[in-house]
Image 1 (tube, one colour):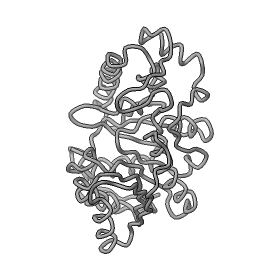
Image 2: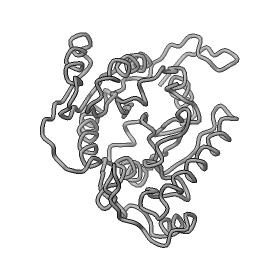
Image 3: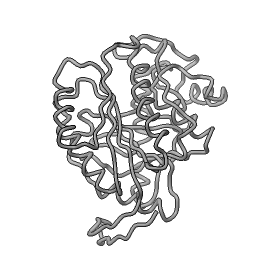
Image 4: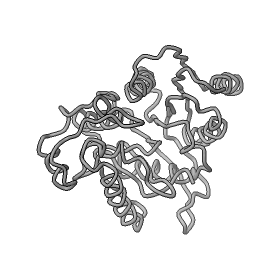
Length: 296
């Protein structure tokens, strides 16, 4: 991968000429109609960083105009492919999300030579903000020089919000599966925020993690061929000593299996955790969080 760049003193890209191959930009859509126009606009800007790109969307039956927007968009951008699912496959949200993301991942696998990178993202309010395309371009460039990352996610403003997908030593599992989950959410949020603030002091410093998403992740396809998304509870992927360490730092004496308002912790975990853990175990994928913010 080659890239000719011109940076100013603030590390903003003045002019860029890339030869980074292709990228498949994908994700699930359900009831995202009010955000889709801006998200799709942002995707086109991301796609401009690559030699070529495609968009793969798994649409789940919605109560709004999401499908109409997607079908109209396909008429003006033939790079967009939409799979329409009208059947509810599972009563558990994370299980359905895993099915959607795995559909996209299977497309990437079948076209690995065409797409050395893929992006998995959400199509909601998180990515419907103004985009700083220079952030993604910077990490694509430096990764081509010194192989910084295999999977990279980013910080968000005003706070790092996606604590559910986050596994970072010593917090290896979901905060929802330990006692005092609300308190531990805040503790883990402060912990990762402190690490990201420290990393931001160096333009190339990244925070290593076990799993992270925060609504947007970019991946080197070759490192994610032997993994899949799984919204079930996968304790078999986490060493017992790591779980015990997590229990100790959160002052929790046991793992909790509880039904919450938005998630059923008896049967569900964030689908990104299994995906990232298996990629690391099976392919040695290195997962990092960048302190930079892509969507402002």
